[in-house]
Image (cartoon, rainbow, N blue to C red; front, side, top):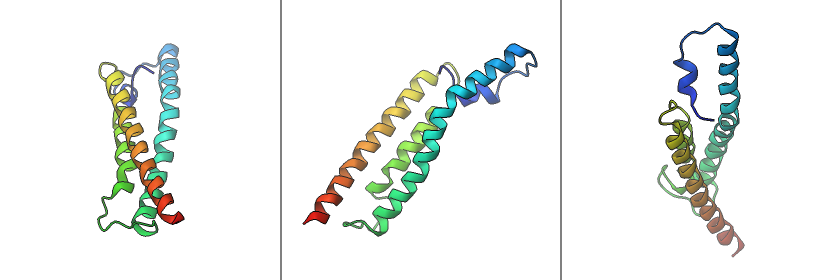
Length: 118
């Protein structure tokens, strides 16, 4: 897509057929990322709880490496909010941060697997 959620909430009220079709088009282009954010939010909570309570290396702080996915999810969600001018930059930066946090989390999972195999 070319625009984020801001366009849906701050558009002029247009009761024409073209305005309704345009709104549905924007909404349908944003739904896949919204589903990803929703699922990632619950997965990041589950992984954070696992890393804080049950992993082989339990960290004493609540802001441990298992919480990084939540930061990536928030960056992805914030990147989807902006209007047409900033949307291409913010959505790609949000996706990049989300991907980096996934890689950091994969490193933690690998460390946990190696620790459990010993």
